Image (tube, rainbow, N blue to C red; front, side):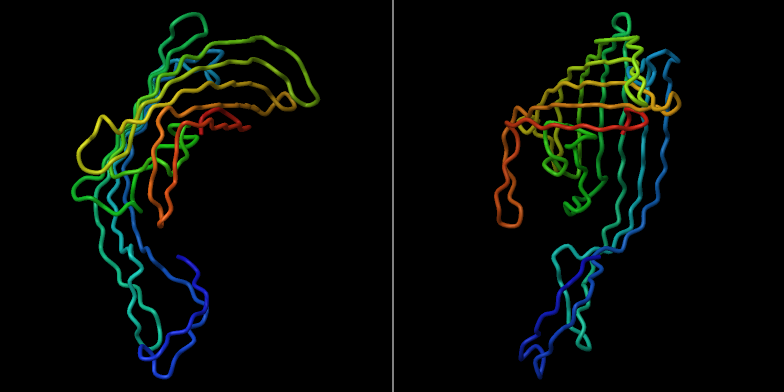
Length: 258
């Protein structure tokens, strides 16, 4: 839904002119049915949270039933704005998997792949996949890369900087510090895939594993990413440019998975 401020419906659309009061607009009525298969085969190691070894991932199928008003079309009936819905019913299929290979003592190479598609005819961009942001290609903002289809490949090398820190700071017990470097390639698109549109990025991340009050896991990360490709999108008459810039992320959680 969206809130609408009051406005005047002028003559001859209303006779006499009518001041329409503040109201709300329901522009989407949707339902979703989902089946998901999730798999996790992580080896139990001392670094399981901060630097896992093994395989994780999921395969997800969605069937969506949507009544959507994409262009803001309305008719006036009894002095009220009635939204004109179109039906958008479609299937969505997505796979996201991570394979963590041990390459040396407490060091790993992670390969992450994500593939997704809306099956059938092209849907409005409201239903797009999004590839950027902290849960995807960190070198670009979340909404920068979108489309009815998505593909992403990430390679990450992670290694320890300090282990067995064994130091207490206030209520925090510091355990270990790991670092990773990574590279990304991916895109989201409509229609046929275009290799020239693939976006690329790289970055580095620090992970600090701690405990609070010797009980609660407390994990901190800091990430810096750079996008190698500059591109522009037209959004509501304004040109927005992405890429060729640094982006930074940080967080504190009970684990490192978001």
